[in-house]
Image 1 (tube, one colour):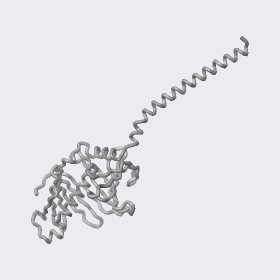
Image 2: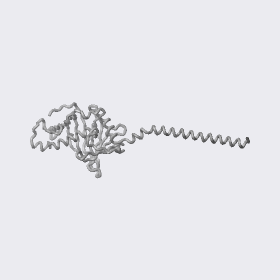
Image 3: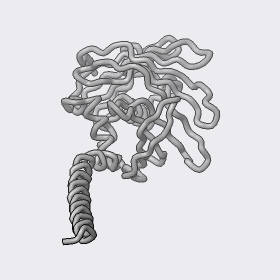
Image 4: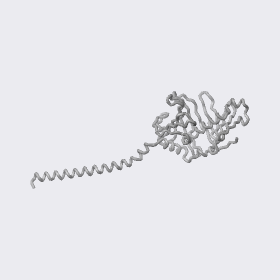
Length: 270
């Protein structure tokens, strides 16, 4: 064999070796990429979380033992409005029996609305036969009382109340800033006979804690209000927001603040 032929064969062997080397290397890289894709798959699935998933996680955070449906407690709270003195209120709640009774101070008198199921009765300072004049003055009628029952149950029962029948949850999860905080948000509407407002609920992306919400009467007009939550109170194994502060949507005008003072075991007579 000549020197030229020997060089040719040597270079051909080297070429084949390099070719095989790159083939093996490509095959190895493909396998590694496949492994990485499998490892990343769970994160891709998490990123596709639905609004129902987010609400379920929030309920698990706030009521991990599903205690809300059987809650029997007295809620003591106060509300303040700009330029007005704080007003003390008590909600006597027995969810197992559909009992929601509300006592509020009005004109120096204790006005109590007793609601059991859909039945309502009233007392003023312990007098269960208020005059027609007082009944009119304090709006002691079933329509007003049932509205307040629904209002307080909804606010104190969030986010658990988002699992109620008639709740329409937009499946999309929105990334939105709320009160200077990055949040995951859900859009919620209701069947016509339940409510006409459009609601957004905002949750901490890490813990799923509900940090606030807002509602619109007409979303296109940007009306309505938003509510900032602050603090958590451990109540019967649940994490109940301690403070709610209300603002207008258009210009963030302060409307008022509700503060949970304490809770006690249910103790109330009709």
